[in-house]
Image 1 (cartoon, chains in turn yellow, green):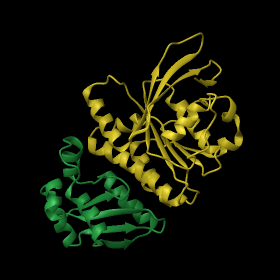
Image 2 (tube, one colour):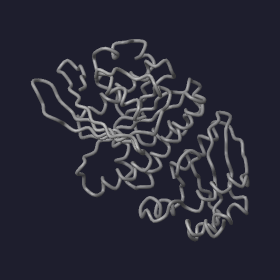
Image 3 (cartoon, one colour):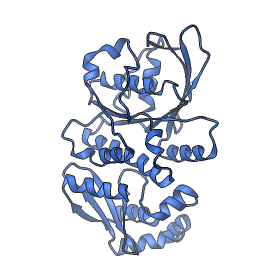
Image 4 (cartoon, chains in turn blue, purple):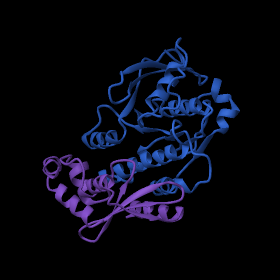
Length: 229
Length: 109
């Protein structure tokens, strides 16, 4: 999954998107950052990236509907890509569990990417580590099932956004450490210098395992355009 | 083989082998292709182990594996892995809806 994010973040640079390993879903990825750090925008960019790959649809889960499209340029305006993103809004943790547990009943093509925004909103009701682990494990199990449905070489990626601070208190640190046992790859988003009307972020991707650590600077223009350097 | 298992997993090893011997592990699958393991514990209680990743619904997994991090896995997960190697795993086919209920019962306890 780190590879998809790497492609999203590298697309802005001179190298252009890499074709290799497009079908390789890779380990599940946790997208971490404080409030308003661009997590939803990056999830959405990943959704657009995979929707444009000619593979299966993208399933985007979130507690609340998006108020507006986080990106308003380029691929975000491509109706063919937008049509391939299926948004679902489970209103409670219980409904999210129900959706994941019954994912195999849906008679629709298996998604190529499973996204969940604002995991913290589903964890607040469930404080215990067992429940946190159960939700993480069920997300992995659902993605593994989609993987199995998609067949060899196609795979379903999993990317989950969680509001988190790097200098959090011990309770949050424990919860994050637990989630990272299930999500080997992670990407931290931190606010950077804010320029004239634009918001800057630093994205730091740790793909898990032996992969290289990479950093990008992301700038959001007032018109919603995302530029990456 | 047994002494190595016991070295790595401690007392869980013998309990897990006991579960395998008693054929306590069932692989439940539905026509959709989704699968889940159920293990009948020594107390008569049934625990659910996810097939694709490291998760068991038993209290020992919550305590020793997740909270204290002093075990790698509980006896039920070890029994699932051992039963797959030895082929001593019961098979059960259910409908897609029944599989949802099995996964959900665990979530709503």
